[in-house]
Length: 354
Ligand SMILES: Nc1ncnc2c1ncn2[C@@H]1O[C@H](COP(=O)(O)OP(=O)(O)OP(=O)(O)O)[C@@H](O)[C@H]1O
Ligand SMILES: [Mg+2]
Image (cartoon, rainbow, N blue to C red; front, side, top):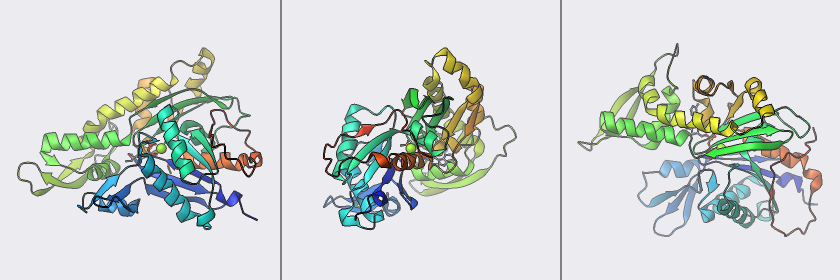
């Protein structure tokens, strides 16, 4: 007998990281969502970390990012990535036709919805469920189920998308998707260094500086730290290193950080007075990589009046939630020859069986 359950697969196709969870094996992959494509032949040469290493170093290679702004914009590349990961991690790879749950931004456009459906079925999905990220993250953290009536607010701050969802009675009450996230912070650091130090910095160097010393101003009692970054002097073209401090990085990222906080505010307006009243006590739970930026919770509280707390410091909440949905909907298996290829968009929670 085929072990269908063994092929249940949850995927969080992030703009910067793709995560995959397999039943019984846990999170098997956290790879940069990047492909390296040969300029001459068009062949894909590498995926994930090896592709990242080729970035800007191998002149024969162009880097392809299959997922932008949380959605598969390069359909062929997204399909390749899904298929490659499914084959790599499923042991019986030639016959693997998994039941897939894929997390998506809650504001997924119809065009991206069709692109994702196409990519997933081409990559071999037997059945596809799309799960909005705020719901996935809430389930992943064990904060919600169809049976619970309390309100949960999730703000998932990723690399390119901030996705805010208000969840009550097992469904998404309101949601807001803003195209802002950690990558905008990296770009702002690159801009500041170019403007003030006349040095061209790579995005990855800017991101490393953000992770090393980044914090949201005002710093309060937070220590001022410093880090050395290497780039290219714009005037001479020669390599140059310089020191960036927490203050420099804080100054650079203040603008995009304010946009993230605005997006969170926009995500909770429009709730009914009953739910709005609850929000002051339940606050906002932050997930996604950029939520780990020190000082962000305090700024959200100061600007929106809502208490904020970091709910997930691994970044895995969404993919774990998607895996939980697979586990709990196992009994609703469609007929073996279900070829309808109509994905299910789940905006209300399944009755999770704990
Ligand atoms: N400790 C940290 N402090 C600040 N930013 C961080 C930290 N760790 C990760 N990040 C940032 O979080 C972002 C990646 O987060 P995440 O993995 O949630 O994104 P993603 O799911 O790939 O993207 P998206 O959900 O927007 O499509 C990157 O911009 C990264 O620099
Ligand atoms: Mg994400």
